[in-house]
Amino acid sequence: MSKEARFLRQENATRFRAWESQKEKSERLARENAELKKENKDLKEKLEDTLEQLGHEVEIKEKYRGMLFKSAKKESTNTKPIGEKRKPGGQLGHVGTSRKKPARIGQEKEVFLCACPHCQTELQKSNNFYERIVEDIQLYSKTIITKYRIQRQWCGRCQKEVHGVAQGTIENSPFGINILMWILIQKYKLRLPLESISASLEIQYGLKIKAGAIQKILHNLKKRFGLKYTELIKEVQENKIKHADETGWRIQGQNAWCWMFSSPESIVYTIEETRGKGVPQRILGASPPGVLIRDDYAAYKKLNLPQQSCWSHLLRNSREKAERANSSKDMRDLHAALKTMFSELSMIIPQQKMSAKKRKDIHQIYKEKIQAIVDSEYISKDAQEIQTRISNQNTNLITALLYPCVPLTNNEAERNIRKMVVTRKISGGSRSDNGAATHAVNMSIIQTLALKKDSLVSELQKLLAPAVVGMVLEKGE
Picture: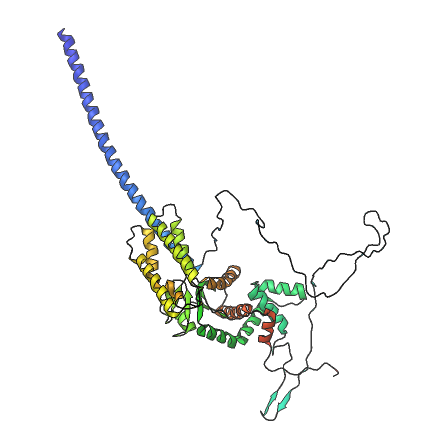
């Protein structure tokens, strides 16, 4: 009996030691588990901080990338629920349109059959007609080559030799102004590459002009347009309403900037190696009159004239932040407030007959509304960023209330500079400084002439017509 008790005590001791070992192991595992949980929590917090920092860095990267190349992505204007597609074509209630019949008929022809096209039965003519008007072009027309015998004449008063310049020609140019106009329109209105212009001339007219020769023609036209370009700059300077914008450009593969300055009557482009404040100061002058409508780029802030900041840029930025999945309530409320304010201003601005006193009173009201946004204590980071932007622009957002005919947005500049953006996407920029200068001057002339109600061709003809035109006689006269 004692032997059995001793065996049970030994077995009990063994089991107790095993239990203590398992207990120590369990406590050790519990401590390790707690440490791993703490480490996991720390790593999760670091990951959240890293993701937030990464998101902020991506925003900064996109911001600076947008300064160089503006995004071509368009926001969807479809307000229908997700998954419901808009029916293609004209919508319900849309008034149909058709091409108008030409006012001038060059020739009339009668069409009839001698035999039935199905059974070849002989047919008789009838007095029953229907009319069909067709417009067409000549695919290949030869160039008109003219030989001028220009008299060398002596002016007794000036004591020097003079000579006339035939109408429709430019001195020292082997091509008439119609070819020059055609090249200008193809290059700066249709934005075709030089090689395509060269190929089109040969296909349509059988005229062989290499791309390098076309570029030389454009350089010469740039010199001829120099005085007109200076006049455009002066017109923009003196106009009461002016717009400004800038976009990236390339010269010999190096970064440069294309600046655009415009008024309702003129457009001026200049391509520079810098995006500094010296460019708008040089183009617009030291103290230009009127109001400048621009985005919130800092290069314009030091200009000595009233400025209207673009609401489109502000609302676009606030909408992007408000529509994010993790946007804050402050941000959504701020965006709604900005939209409401813009709607109110859009109804007030067109009222051009307001007195100066009423304008100042309304301006004071909205100045207080903007100040209220600036003074608000937003906790969320996204709302704070928009608040900082509004604080920087401040009353420049409501300058249009004080002056008639001033728009709230810089959309006019965006439309005008987009023509250069499309050109940059096609050509990749300019191959030389001279090419960049030529492109800026000639593009300014063509786009300004395109603003006029008259046809571009007639305006170009007036501009290219020589100052002194000699009398031209046909051979034998």
